[in-house]
Amino acid sequence: MSEMWINMGPQHPMTHGLWNLRVRIDGELVLEVDPEMGYLHRGIEKISEDRHYNEVITLMDRTCYVAGMAWENLFILGAEQALHVEPPERAKWIRTLSEEFQRIGSHVMWYAAFVQDIGLMAPFLYGMRDRDLVLDLFQSYTGARMTYEYNRVGGVRNDLPPGFIDRARKVCDWLLDRFQEYDDLCLGSDIFRKRCDGLGVLKAADCVRAGITGPMLRSAGVKRDVRKDRPYNAYDQVEFDVAVADGADVTARYLVRMEELRQSVRIIRQCLDWLERNPGPAMAENLPRWMGAPYAPVGKEGYLLKRNYPKGVGLSAIEEPHGEALAYVVNEGGEHPYRVKLKSPIFTNLSAAKHYLVGYRVADIPPIMGSVDVCVGEVDR
Image 1 (spheres, rainbow, N blue to C red):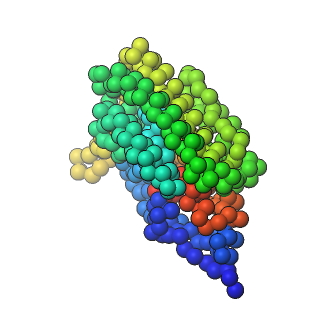
Image 2: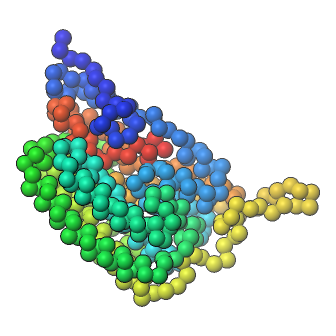
């Protein structure tokens, strides 16, 4: 009997987080896979129901450590729908700018980790170098590099600082040249092509049946992007192209993310131009005090008085760096959300592992799973 089950995880260089991939093999051939998740579950959805709306932002930053701004944006869009709050136009453009910088930070982080998995060390160093420039920009206006706590119901915590726009333009110019450098290092490498071409093939029909979204879906030729199909914030006012490829393999996913990096720079430049020309408030006015601080009125007997606000339901969808994420927020009139439900694109992509791993070799698993771009924080929530 040559068949056996092996565990790649929960502590394994391939996993990039706390999860386990059970693999049934015959020699080196993968016959069956069973992804096991739940090692990192923190109960974020339930905890959110006991927090003021703006306090939930702290949890969203930690949902995915490389896409915190996107998850902040997702929740706050749902919360604003549920609370019947409309942010000012400038806040929408700042959120769009922030989400695209976050997409660059996430994709460059993916690039650095992915190429190291397949044996290329120099691109890893280049990627981490360039990601620092994006984190420096985040720090300049949020005060943090990864856990920002920047979005608020009705807008953003503060406007961009003086000099930010010129500095951001210089970073965009630098990054565009570096993206070409990434391609030269990878597409011109025999190691890269031999480890990636033709691996992890997942055709469009299989992607759709499994509910897969994001770069994995677009690498199979499906032109699906929430920013185009259901615009939010200022995405209906900027020009960009949806990055697609037709190989449906590991190399195609690399090509899609590289093009998305270039399109993100294109969007950011348009945001910077608009923000430079259009000063104004970045936060809605006349909001209830509790939206900015977790205070409740106290009666003369010393008891906290319950405050009632119009009820509502919010359903938001964004194109976060890994795919289509959704948030469902229910407002029953209190100062906390009654229900918060999040849909993670990586949970879906990871659950479909049997569709793109079975039939390949054990040594092919790291590059294939690397092309999926797994962040376990948002899988377990």
